[in-house]
Image (cartoon, rainbow, N blue to C red; front, side, top):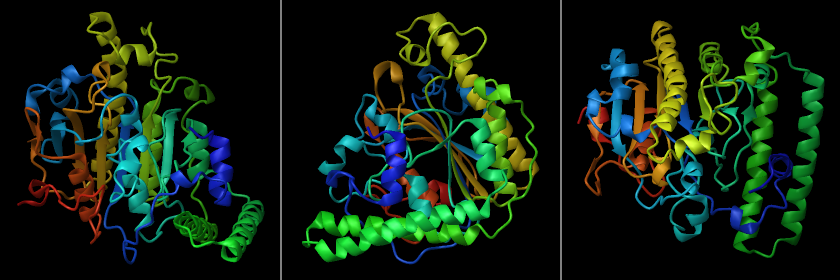
Length: 402
């Protein structure tokens, strides 16, 4: 895996990336204006499977956390993506529906995550086109159309600074100019020395895309950031789970103040840091082996994340934003204790869908509703005409009243 600092340099320069990381590009037509905000939330190793696999709408996670939203949500029970496989590779495939290592086996599918597909195919209408925030460091879940992992903002304070901190315009413009000069120089060299190979075309497209990103970023520098005083102490960052309501709240404020229309909130490793009553590491707990004490501690982690999500949905509803905001909680790993993505859970809120409260996505080994169908449904509800995602174009008809 590429080091994050190296990735920042490579993404900014659009160069020195291995050719196998540059997936074949695809044009999706003219960009659309998003009809909805979209917030994606994930937990790297997934929820405790015992609390979402049985009971349908009466399972523990539905009755304990989301019963008040029965008319505003759909619980997709047993959802998964055939072919995603098992092991820890499925974490990176949470919003792509495809394992990174397997992307070359499916040349007809573009390896891109849902958030990046939304960002790439939409017009920038806010200061930040996309917010990708890791509450604490985890695997990459955001991948652009060139199969490049996108760096995330890590930590509570850095996330606040990104959305509401003061901007040194001269410094930012100088930084953008330097990046653009490098990219344009690289583009000239590519035109001069290109030998017509497929990887040359992909690299040219990658550089052109990075230049376009810079141009959009420079345009939105002119829009003044709203000021939002920090409502959390500096020590809150040292205890990510007990204070994760702050991370959710910052996403809410970003939507409210129109600082972004797309956001990814990820809970990675290190979730047990400064969490009272926890005696094991997160990885050990997720691979609980059926030990009751480990399952109990794993449920404590789930309680913090889902409790924060519940408050976030309440905030959206009370702020009249839920109808205009699609919120999706989804994890690549359905049961970390068995290293499988089969028979997982997804919670879909708001966004103007014709919610069904509960949809059964699998019958035995047969998958009736896939993650890619869910992602294509999000694209449709967001205003996209081309619903292609991971080789799929079908939506979930029940979410649209069919």
